[in-house]
Length: 538
Image (cartoon, rainbow, N blue to C red; front, side, top):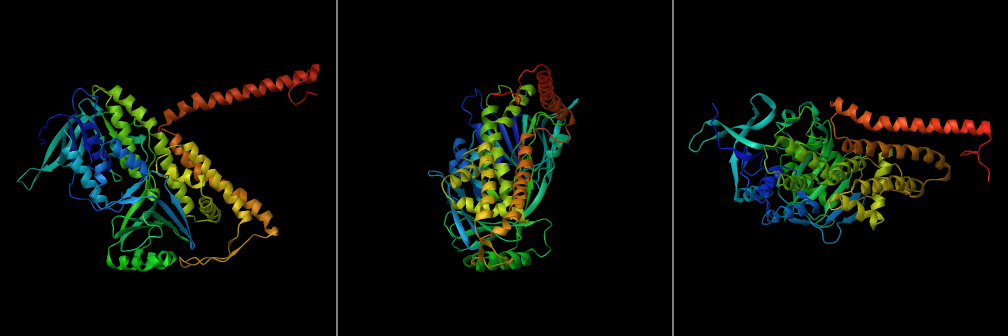
């Protein structure tokens, strides 16, 4: 039988990036008359060993400072990150962050340990090693969550006991493999979809093309390969391998990917692949859905990767999570009584929309860039080439995109502008710039391809192709934008129909009314000789 435990104001499940940051943030709210009592539950407080969550964009560094956690990136051999370098067929382009902004890259486990240490030192926070097994529903009201049941080992005992932790608000921050996502969201939630996997290794004592810059190598017939330092002597390599994964991952990378990398890196890659076990993580897509849907539980909230995921190519996951924590912390601070369900629901709705500028920008950009950088058809290859040459122009063609990527310019409108600027510039490049002639699919990473400008007789074909390229850009960006505009789940037909009746239908009716009035005016003008639009003479 579960043993009763003291009541908390907030119980947080998961002591990762979002969980630790929120626990610390809530404990330091300056404008509450009474300090919140918080339980932070984590199944294992041992240092985690993962291949993601190692690059923090400048926007994430800013969020850490807002939470008073900037010291957590100190003392862990973290490396300043000053921008990116993109490699393509023997060419490179530097994409620095705007002046005054820096990111950090580090060992994920060391950063988590510092966050947990900060949470333990925060007043009112109990960090407890326990495995949460169930959500506790209010008797007679199964939609209302009032706590969690966890399994933990008592001191001096080898057997685990069940313990109940009751709270006014339960926060689920148990990561991408969340055990409670479906329980909280019901039919209102999406299921994560996996587009590809990152396969990781650690390279020792190599020099990247531009130090203190994340490096993205664009390779033929494969996804991009990402490099960044996680220590003075260690560099993480993440190779994107599309699903389904080949049976011989090591052989696939050695045969198809490594030969296309710069020669200065190839030997270290081969050594790392033969020395260490390859690690892999799914690159999942999970759009955020309003947590006030008809199937959602109340008294509980999802945060971090448990609720919203994007492709890790742009390193934006931690930045979104920390920004979400900043916004949610401030909103929770305005609620006098966290057991007030209507007030909490209203705050969650406000949080959902307040986070949109940054979260939507990072989410859309991550998969838009991935589709371009991992080009697997001829039209996407045109866009990839155009994107690379767009960066080569410098100026705002670099400052704008990198400000979006780094989380310091949260603007979907600016993202739309730059994405379609790339699309139109790609079409211009297709007509005017020399292009590779029959490139080898696995060319050496230092080799520059033979180029030739398009001939005049090719222009009619290129004109037709330009429409296909533009359409490809639309079908890359459009669905991603739609997932951010739509706040209801596909299963929520009631809300979808309501939106249709309140927005789409009135527009259609109004357009039909205007058309009818105009047609009648034309008819009367024809009968009576009255000049109308399109028929007047001056």
